[in-house]
Amino acid sequence: MSQNRVGILSRILTNLKNTFFIAKTKAKFVGSDQFGNRYFEKAGDDEHSMRASRFIEKRPGQDYSDIPQIPVEWNAWLRGRRTDPPTPEEIEMNSAKTMQTKFRAQELEKKFAKQNLSSDSGSQAITEDIKSPQTQHSFPVYEEYEYKPGQKYNKDGSSIN
View (tube, rainbow, N blue to C red):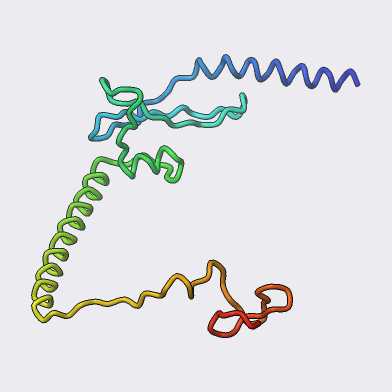
């Protein structure tokens, strides 16, 4: 029983020592993004049972209540979905793809707007069947289930008396 207490006491002292050791570890600067945010990484230490951590330092002058804009590539690195930080070339390539996709979407919207204007002249209207609220049920209606004890549903949803 005395060894169990020593084990608990040594765990407490080890955790206390590790707490003070964390403050001494240096963060390594990894990179920055186009918004001015800086990204850092602290290496893990198995001997002191510390995990590696990654964090962001907001751009100077940004209010602490504001959420920083983080590019997708850096967000994936921060969350550990990728091992290596993104390169500036990769970020530039993904930004170009995003701009190209937005441009193509605008072209498609213009194309479909022109088609809709030309089809509206033929007075073709899109209609929708609207069911009255009395026939709609809040739950699915099945023949084998009872509406009330002893009463069952018809196929059309009305109850059998």
